Length: 279
Image: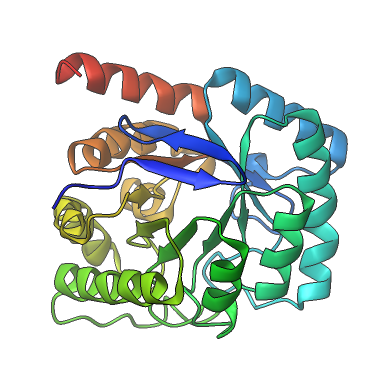
């Protein structure tokens, strides 16, 4: 099935005919990767400017950690972190697409009002059952991710009979649910590291092209994750080289969006990918 190659939001059009970068901006005190954290508004704006200058097409702003073991936080706490960040970035960089990384519908609604363009929900409406109808009413793109369990317990003992088939089936059904609810633009994310063992993650990456049957853009979130640094016996701080290696695999498997901490290096992977395949 041909994969959708454009997104529309708030009068803007985003071209996905070639892979693009989503830069990660964490407005959280407990991100798994320290250097991905922005402790104050000035540093967040500097990091946003750096990512945009290096080639990021989207900035993804999150106010609640979703690393393994993280507990869900109240919407009010999340709102206090992300809304000032989105407002400030939107005012300073009005032509840049902003995504809000949230599982709460009230945060999604307030984020769009503050200047965001995309809702990125790790739970695909599983945590807040009003999320999908809220996104439909906002008429913005929605990133639906596969996760087994919740962040606090998802890595305790993930079980699958066939991880690729189960993730594809889940995301295909979720895309249908979203479309039936009235969401026009849907992006699917296999959810590397979210309720998956290392073998599950690598099997899913090897077979990620199977998601193309859904006909929706594919987002790959691999940056500095445990599937890299735990496998290599290092740490998130030392996982850039491994991340770069897996980004090329993700592009070869059909990823349209790479969600990354390190924009410059990811853009270099995309440039080499284009040269390699004469795109």
